[in-house]
Length: 258
Ligand code: MG
Image (tube, rainbow, N blue to C red; front, side, top):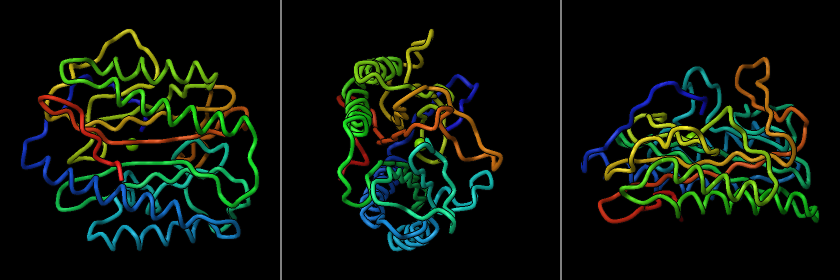
């Protein structure tokens, strides 16, 4: 999501958490199904239409459709597109493309938001792309592992950044993870970099989307004239993985694991 200026957070009620947990569960299943549908020769618009059908089959609706005017069911971001890619009939997937699918489902008042990046086709990939994918996934897992009730949001950020730096990947700073649950984007921000603020304390009932967006080259990105598509400044590929977590009294639950 785009950087917010507010500095607060949302604690969800047990009744809300029941709905959020179920929405997140079906979103994770949809993410896997949609990612498996991506193949060379299809357009991203075709993939988006299939994604819409997958989402509606859960009984839910695509959260991103019409969100602040977003025109598609999901975000499909290919190669140097970091996030918020708009599916198009002009974009034909090729063997070896790196495709991020970011899926949101609204179900019975709960919202799920999760993403993964996959290689399309079976062309052998490069060491650099392997490093990008492995580093971004490991960064997400490190962020999850660093989230403990009583800790701070900054613990997550530090863990993600440590892995990204170790893999020598560029950390996108213009976009951050976020609270989620009954609205798509809720406070607090969950940066993928260490900032001067530790952020709020991780308290029971908080639901957070941790979503490292890491680049093979420069961290710098720009937004296209469509006001959505975020691309790397140097044209090198980017990866994006996102899970939703719930902080409970005793531990951290990953809501979008399949
Ligand atoms: Mg998100």
